[in-house]
Figure 1 (spheres, one colour):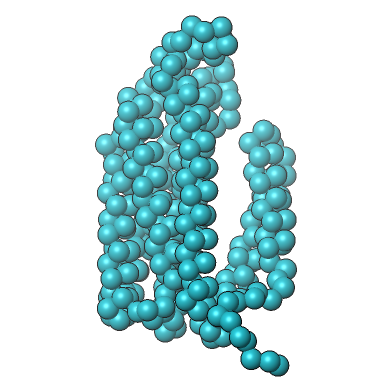
Figure 2: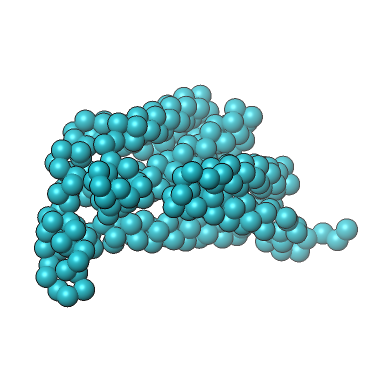
Length: 284
């Protein structure tokens, strides 16, 4: 086998991209179908897709960790490419959340507009935002939402602490700070699940009881997808914690953790906008 003459990594053929795409397709077909009809077997379809996606992510992660930690393929030029890739991925996530904010502000800023194309919609809203049928059903922003804000901002501080400790080759404080960050992420998710359980409105449209409509749709889509990102970010950090326990990462070579920290800070910032707009500005 001839010696490699360049610092770039030519990736071996892998089945994981196509398997991940197929698993995600099955998962979202099940999820979207369940949103339209919660009486069928769609939760099982979602679970199957999610299960295959988690398995694929694990196997793909194992391959990437092996390439970086044991085979030495992640040279400086490769790492630069990884940084650009992660930055572009986060930019695409910003555009993703922009769609939910656009939907929210589209209906909330002009609920009383009388243009012909908006008359029917705004009559249903009652000319006010939040809609009349949401009166008395909204969350107090200074209870669970504010507590979750403190938790998530604190986790941003602890993940930065972990990063600084790693750069100082202080593995003990790196693991301590990372463990605290993971615990805070789990606490955030648990509180949000409790909040959803307490909700007096549902995602499903129910005109008779006034428990559905545009407000619950925008609320659950925006906060729900953010919650999914918190869960994904927590999984990223758990993987980094396990790798740290195994002795992975060096002060000058730890982009796997750095990418997870970037993602976690992105989740922090999105939550600040969600709290300010959906809970506080449009709250009771």
